Length: 313
Ligand code: BMA
Image (tube, rainbow, N blue to C red; front, top):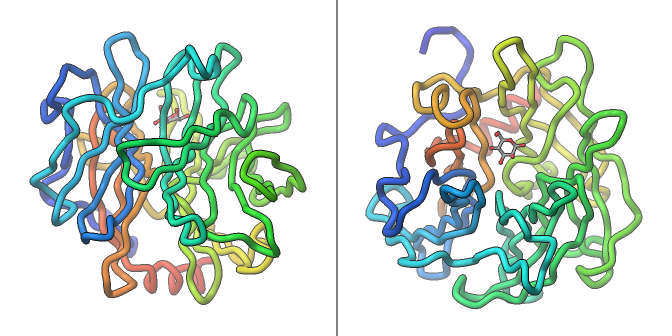
């Protein structure tokens, strides 16, 4: 480390843990994976895979330790289906996985790239082999979305990031049936001016439910003369009224520092879409896309993140 900041996340020494060369079929890049622990204890990553047309699909990789020995599906696991879902014309991207006990299923919230820009789509699955597609649930331009794992006051809750004339901020919307969404609430605004998270922010992995509140790892995008710089920050939200922000850190906690994060198809990007929580309930494995080219792993402690927010929030 070249500075004295307390580091909340520790990069795995095998990083990047997955690259295009690991894939069983020809691909350009692998990035931005959703993640979950399966009932057998294995880690499943649902990776965004970009082909040489520039279009993405999703492909599952499974590992017993969440680090190496990945078993990658021999074929794409979930392809865009523009014939039935014209909204998926230019591919599907950036999945966030939430296990929903009430349904006994995983909800996969992903980006459908339409001819009018990116919007948000939903699919449910029990096994990551067959999928129940709900199609698009938020129209463009909208990204960076995940479902909370249970209803609040009878309604499902979606975090998402619509883009408007006044910036790109995080919102929450509510639904009785996962299909019809309303009661939109502003959740967290991008800051302005010189801040690291000025003008454009978005959810990174799904919120983490803790006794203190929903712990949210979000990304901030800084525009510089050299291009965009994607970094991560922390915020905490009320358990019962999840759009209510309790604390927000002023400083970023993770950013592109290693060569595989700084160089690639889109340099200076760390972009997590998923995590797994170890059986100790504290050790977090954060899986992130590095420079839109490969997949990397960093570990952290939920307790340490909450303590950091106490001091820096
Ligand atoms: C965001 C998303 C991510 C991507 C990032 C950097 O807007 O498209 O998929 O990793 O830009 O290119």
